[in-house]
Each structure stands twice: as structure tokens, then as C-alpha cells.
Length: 357
Image (cartoon, rainbow, N blue to C red; front, side, top):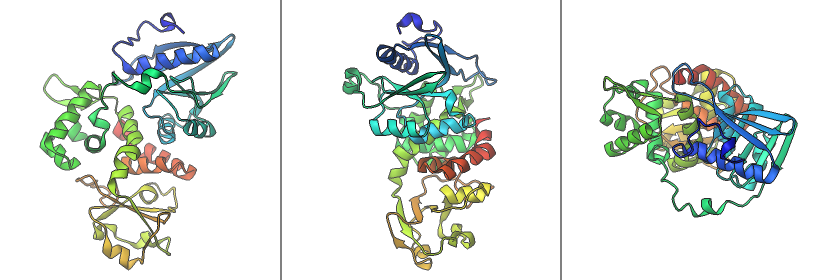
């Protein structure tokens, strides 16, 4: 595919996502002979979101996809994107810089279609089929000599700020000072300022004429947070696993008494009543030694209790003993377990949809 095959409304010089899509399409054309056509859908009712659509053609065979750019592309990211559109995997095509061979195999096994700039691909629609894995990363991407720095908004501290903004709409509307946002996120004032500027530059935060602000494209921002949380922030929360013989101990435990709140499968069970937890997840301000002793928990890397450090400093007034639904959602997707993914869908429908709206 050459530049003439692209829709003229797409300015690749100013849009790195479209540039990445174009490079992946060119790589695939060179390997498979597929023809690609890109265009943008009209903005949604907020006036912010314009969906990218990609049409693949080879002879009389045609497939039409909704494009999702993910950096990096992980199975958890793919699951989150599919849930956001009602689980319609066949309509999604993920595009990224490079997909490792093992990840490519896992995505194919789960039915997620993708292409990358190394011509790795899984396509199965409209009579078109391709599965290519193990392609070498292009030289320009291996060198990464002019690749822009990773936005602070999706680094460890930045994810805390974005979490506070998504879970506290008043913050995103400019009703909280930068200091208040920093206190809620547990980060320094300078970090909040840098993340706010990043969000503006990335198009996720709009400054209003009257001096206020509002989040834009909340759905995409929420998904990006869920993508990056298990890779960037979660490992820094000192996760520890324990085993206890009583699998239902959490049902009659006042977790707030121990400075904690329920996350993951336990949060989903309490919020949706659509899951019987196999692992009880706790986010706590400090390691709850009293709880560990009372429940006779012993360290076990594969145990049925997981305890992580609580990283935010605000409460959900409706559910003070449960993590914000966005965090439970990200934890559920990260597991890859089918029953947890179904529970995540219920969480999205019941709680996260209103965050987006």
C-alpha cells in the first residue's frame, strides 16, 4: 500500500497512531498482497471521538475492522477493548509496533486479530486468513533513535494521577486544585502538573473557554489505564501471596478494620454478585499482620490471598470497603480467566459505563 491508498483526511505527519497504522499496513501489503483503506468515522455525540476504520481487500474478499492501536499490545489490553464494544472480537483489529511470538500465539488462541510493523499478523474474516508470528522488528524500531519519550501519564506515578481523575469526575472538571489531586493520587505537586500537561498534549484533557477543563475520550483513556496498570504500577505495589484453609473467610470479615479494601475477584463478587472468588485480593495501607495471624495465613506464591499496597487516598462513599470499580476491572482482565472476564463485563456495564459518559 502506498500513500495514495490512504484516506486524505488522515495526516500521518501529525498523528503518530495513524503513522503506526500506515507502517503496519505497508508491511502487511509487502508480505501478503492485501490492500488497505483507512478512514475516520464522524465524531460521536461528545464531538471528541472519531473511530478509525480499516478495510482489507484481496480480490473479491473484503473485511472491515474497527482499529485499536495498543502500545504495548497485551492479551489483557485486547480483552478490555473487546469488552468495551460488547465482546465483538471479530470487528476489532489491533495494531502495534511489534508482537512477540508467544504473545501472538496467545492472542490468536483467544481470537484477537492483529498486525504489526514486522508483518506479524492474525487475520480471519471475510474469507481472508493469515497467521504470521516471529517476524523481526524493523531496524528503525530497534534503534528507537527518535522515538518520543513515554508520556508521564502512563508511567508509574502518572497512572496514579489518571486513576484519581477517572474516579473523581470533579477533579477532571477543574473543581480540585493540583494539590488536592496530588493528595488524592499520593504523588508530588510537580508530578500532577506534568501529567496534566501530558493529558492535554495527548488530547485527553480539554481546556474550556471559561477556564475550566474536562476529560475527553474517556473510554479510550480508561482502556489505556487498564492496559498499563498491570505492567507499570501493579508490580510496584509489593504484591504478596498467602494461603488460608478457609476459602470463604472473606464473607464475614470487616476488611476496613484492618486498613484494607477488597479488590479483584472479591470486589467483583461484592459489586456484581456474578462471581465466586477463588483468590481474595486486598489493597491495604500497611501489611495487615493482625488479619494474617487471625486467619492463619502462610506465605505461598500461588496462594488464594493476595495483598497489595493501597496507592490512592480517597474513598468511594458508596462502597468504602471496596476498591474503585476501575481497579477491580483491570485486575480481573489481567488474570485472563474466562469467568473473571465475564465478571469484568458486568462491572463495565454497571459502573464503568457511567465513568465514560
